[in-house]
Image (cartoon, rainbow, N blue to C red; front, side):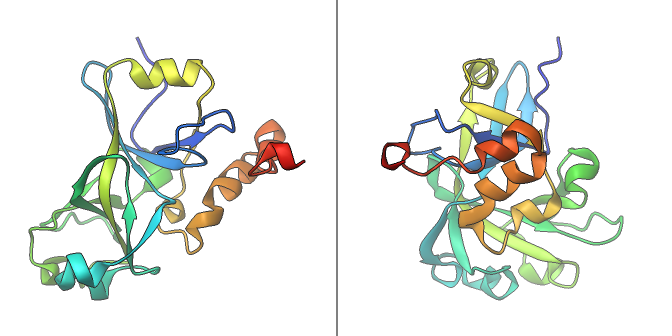
Length: 191
């Protein structure tokens, strides 16, 4: 049975999602298996930690802001990176997401590989600490309960220049009711 969730889509937190780990978050689905669960990376949580403090060899290749992003509440002591490449080649140290045209040429980077292998190919790179994870069926239940909108991604979402505005921007471009939701106040009690 198809559940509609697939690699390359975005999970956008609805205003009803109060969990501080995901409030107003935009999550890129990077792995999905209906039997094994789902992994994603929160795209709009920059930290204050400069990349050169934790991964100096990769720092000069990072797309600004040049800080580590909090990819989710799980495994915060582990880093992963997403990069966008031109062309059709799949160089060593990079694995394309299986997300179709929406996130064409965006993939996971092997941070243990020498940066020089990928440097000539990189268009954009972003480093994340941790990830978001859901067990089999858990994410589907959260979507049905109204915690998440499932929407198409664009490659630029991963490398947004103003990540704090990504939630509003993604919702606004959906049009209709979701564009209206993008205007939902940060604190509705002040309205």
